[in-house]
Structure formats: C-alpha cells, structure tokens
Image (cartoon, rainbow, N blue to C red; front, side):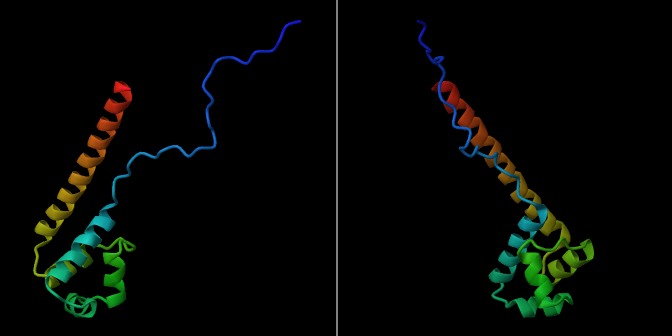
Length: 118
C-alpha cells in the first residue's frame, strides 16, 4: 500500500496581494503640489492667484490637485501670477520628479539587497 505524500514545497499564498513597484509620480501631480506650495508661501487665497492668472478658482484648484492636464499657456499664466518664471517652475518640477525616481530606485535596490542577504 503506497501512501500519498505531498511534495515538499513551500505553500504559496496566491491570494495575497503582490507588492506593487513604486510608481513614478505624474507631472501634473508634482506641478500641482509646487503651484500650491508657491501660493501658500505667498499667503494667497486661491481666488487671488486665479484672478491674476486669468483662470477660474475652480480650474486653479484642479491644477493644484493634479486633476487637470493644463496647457503650457495656463502653466505660464499661473507661474506669472506667482512671480516665478516658467523655466524655474519647470526645473523645480523636474527636480522633484528626479528625486522621486532616485528614491524609488534606491528603495528597490535596498529591498533586493536584503532579499539576497537572507
């Protein structure tokens, strides 16, 4: 009589959620954070900045929350209303994106190193 012995394999929980890789933030989200930060630094209300930029407060709010994908003209108008140049704003957003990418890739490298060490 042969008994049935299950193979020696670790159980795999296929229902457990797999960790998702760190996602790179979207340009519009980082732009919105930067615009809101600049507006807050100036101590301005949304309506004040929007009025100077020639956009509605609702549109500016959507830009700041990363909901809208604004045109370059809209970005330039809001940048001007906040007394920053388009190039300075663009560089600040690009630097934030670069930092986020660097942090994400460094985290992945550290995780891989810990996995190899174990």
